Amino acid sequence: MGLKCGIVGLPNVGKSTLFNCLSNAKAQSANFPFCTIEPNVGVITVPDERLNKLADLVKPQNLIPTTMEIVDIAGLVKGASKGEGLGNQFLANIRETDAIIHVLRCFEDDNVVHVDSHVDPVRDREVIEMELQLKDLETLESKMDKTSRLVKVGDKLAAKQMNFYNRLKEHVENGASARSFETNNSEEVLWLSEMQLLTAKPVMYVCNVDEASVLQGNKHVQAVRKVVENEHAEVLVLGASIEADISELDTYEERQLFLDELGLEEPGVSRLIKSAYTLLDLITYFTAGEKEVRAWTISTGTKAPQAAGVIHTDFEKGFIRAEVISYDNYILYGSESAAKDAGKLSVEGKEYVVKDGDVMHFRFNV
Image (tube, rainbow, N blue to C red; front, side, top):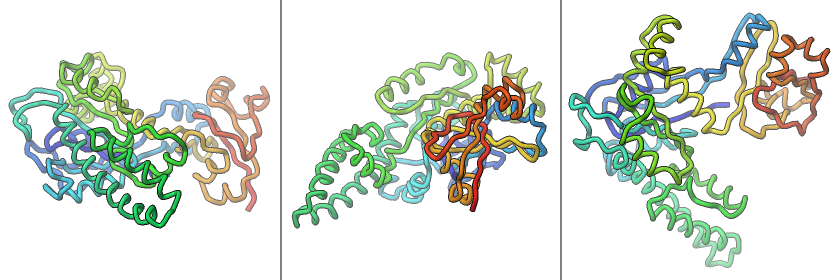
């Protein structure tokens, strides 16, 4: 399944530096605003230690991790919702993403200019959120205008929708994001989803800090955590410049030594990728054989036939059954045959909900 996260933020907060660390694609990174105009797209692998452990047991010809797209979207400015600073283009790029990685500058450095002259991540967040909210209000007003015509002719469903839109509009007008709006039933969940509002997208706030703050954060990080505490969002702390240094090191041993010196267990970008994967409410299942050991991405709650369809549509159409071994049992017994002999291979039908880490083999007939 195609997954795309958009990196957004004000100009010059470290978006492109972070993108360079995440992807082999190299976005231009410089100390001036609007360095990025066209969105840079990179395909990145989702780190998963389980894949390597399965490969150590199976010894496949190929090892294929799951991936996602990261899009470096040019810096937004005040007035973007009205077209300022190529705003319409930027907002259109955001609309195409599944989730937002919002980079906030949380470090002081007189050598790196700030678009608003001084560092204030809470203000910076509000600038971006305001532009997204204004665009969402445009979408809402357009929807309400069409719905009001149906209300006038006595459409009862339209009347219910109008009530929902009015509540949602008031929520956004009060400076809140659609993702924090409380829906009353599955019908409202559907209506909210259909509008594809920008502020309804899952968001992760990445606090870009200096080296001294990567472990404990700083006052700027604390301010961000406080302002988003009631929002369904994650706050991740990392230093983009440190991540850039790590990415320049050639060997695993050199990178690990550098991390040890900083007191870090893994690079911040690895934590970001994993968190983005979780943010989208995704899980991984595996296929394991001599030809390849591979990770596959599905949404939480996916049933076996639909999971099979991620491999090929014929697998879903002709689904017969799934043979499943949990990851823990596969590792414990060391092979598919040993797990089967121990009674740890289960045969599941169309209603089976796939679990994170399942090692699966599908039987189908088309």
